[in-house]
Length: 104
Image (cartoon, rainbow, N blue to C red; front, side, top):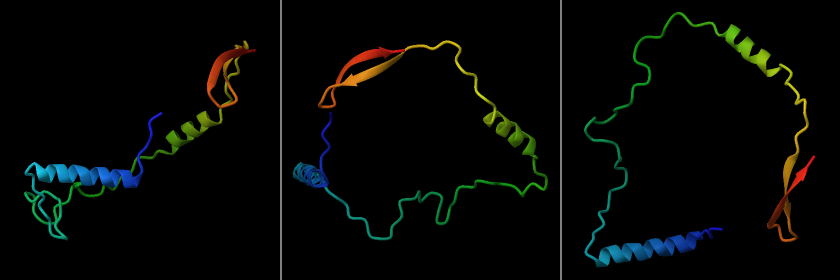
């Protein structure tokens, strides 16, 4: 099982990594508050267009499709004709898996 590190351990690890980076000659640039990380090529206010074109006056009727899906939901399922044995995992007193057992 992998042991997770606490937030404090992660914080100390990050501080050690930053100190190691700075001691090898690296530098950290401070970004002023309010500066966006968006692409400056597209300019300010650029948004991705999801719907380009006017609204379509005609809509596709999906009531028949929805009725078909609902009919499939309420259709009775086939039952198995033959009973097959199943495997069950047996655990010890400490919750560790012990062995597999077949049940009819």
